[in-house]
Amino acid sequence: MTHLPAIGFALVAALCVALSAVSRQREAARVPDGDLGAFGVLGSLVRRPNWWLGTAVGAGGYIFQALALGRGSVLLVQSLLVTSLLFALPLAAAFSGRVVRRAEWLWATVLVAAIVVLLVVGDPRQGHQHVSNRRWLITAAIGIPLLLGCVLGARRRVGRTRALLLGLAAGAMFALAAVLTKSLVALLGDGPLATFTSPVPYALAAVGLAAVTLQQNAYHAGDLQASLPAATVAEPVIAAVLGVLLLDEYLDADRDHVLLLVVAFAALIAATLALARSAADTGRDDQPARVRA
Image 1 (cartoon, rainbow, N blue to C red):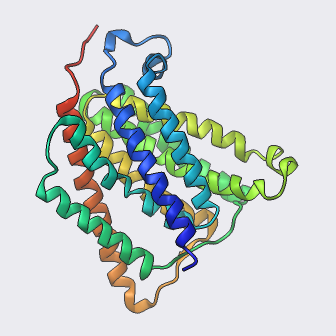
Image 2 (tube, helix red, strand yellow):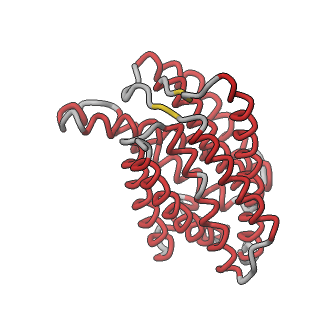
Image 3 (spheres, rainbow, N blue to C red):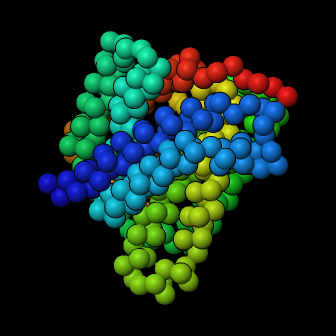
């Protein structure tokens, strides 16, 4: 099967993402509001060794994600990265000293089944390796106002709404980073001159930093039941849309299977939401009371 290398790398990336998310989420939730410096949540986290350990594991996951994107479509890789929830489920339960519930295993089974259907029946295929400037401009014209709306809206809100908006923004930025990563991997094959004279690596660095900052602020907002599901669902959905619109990726499926694929995609979203809420419940029970200035 031609997808096997991409699938293998994506699953390793998902494991790293789970380990990193559990670690960094715990650290972000433990930052007292009175400890926020001039650089906000991220400025406080960089002084914590456990956050750096989680970040290092996350960096390893990003390398495996890049390897997967070099061999498979954004549709394929980002769908598989959702399995990080399957790895995070027992990890988060172990940290909090609880047993994984039967309903959580049921949703985990639904998630696996949905992914299998999308991969086997949908057979996601790659399109172009590079995105034209015109498509980037259209994406920026639509995406930047929406992103600013989420961020500015979050600044005027507290609690659940703030966490939800920041989670959506973080998921969108990670989705954009996936497309930029795929373009960067293709550029690396063209040589260092083509790579470093292109705006892609610099845009990726900016988008990546923004994504991590938004993610940590979403975790710190306090309501993981809002931020974690929002970010977890937004990333694969927006990445799939960008993969189709920017890279001309597609599902190589018969028309007779369209309904099955729609059901599988809906099941994927439902299972992702359910598992993310479970992970958020675990994180909320495990985090200490917030210290406010």
